[in-house]
Amino acid sequence: MLMMNYRNGLLTLFVLLVFNLSVFSQSNTKFYEISEKIENLLKYKDKSPDQLRMLMKELEGYSQNNLNEFNQIKRRVNSYILPIEIKLARSDIYNRKYRNAVDQTKQIKLNYSYSKEIEKLEKYLDNKLYNYHKKIMIQQKPSWFSLEPSISFYTQEKKIPQVTKISNLNPNYGLGFYVKFNNRKKDNTSQKTIYAFSQIGIKMEFRDNSYVLLKDTSNMIVNPYFNTQISFLYRKTIGIDFGVLQNLNSQNNNLNYSFTTSFFIPIRIISFGLNARLISDLKSTNPNLQLGGTIKINLGIYKPFSIRDREEVKSQVFKFKENR
Image (cartoon, rainbow, N blue to C red):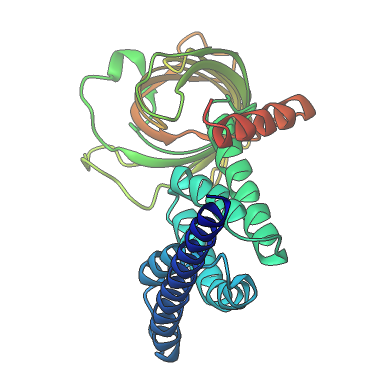
């Protein structure tokens, strides 16, 4: 009885040994079949990263008894796939597909061992994300100053009772520099925030008498002038200007003074306005009057970006990368 149990044990051990050898042989055969497919793919100039990844995943399942060879093949495949993965991630960054780029970079860090190229990719991504969120923050801030080039067409100055029609319009070229204040955010659906504001500054204006619109030849005596003004604008709509006006090419070199009121319709950075201007030497009780229209562009200058803003942008970058 003891002898029979012994023989049965040996038989079972033999069967298990044969089975394991068979499995081992099949595993090795499958491993080398897949590795040969990978080697063939690597010989071509253009290789499919998806195919290589699929074969490597399949090869890993048969690599238990061939770990050294598997690691060698993996290093070779990774040396080809990694640069492609980095190029694809950089392409997404270039095309501002930042969500895809963040996800790809995270996956690259998981799939590959540490590499300086991966670290460079992450720094490049972080820099682009920082600049992107910084740009958004600055777009939402109001500017502190503004530069306003303008062109106006004013009638020839006449005594108020003599103004019966609009004629003899000369172009006035202006340039103003202003300090903005009382900024108030307006409701806006676009990414860039629109503000209503008031401003005060200095405006220079030159009348060009070489061009006349709506000519009236009965009265064409017009001299060019410079008008230096203190200019105030309330809520982008109501303007009040006080100026010192110096006539050029005139025998009378006495200074005149101007008082201008304006009403503007702002459309983003462009404003269309109607103007009325009184001109007097402050001695006469009957000043001259000019009527006109203006087109001007408000160019915002200097939006502050503080240390606190910088830290906030870094926090936004972190939240974006963590998908929070």
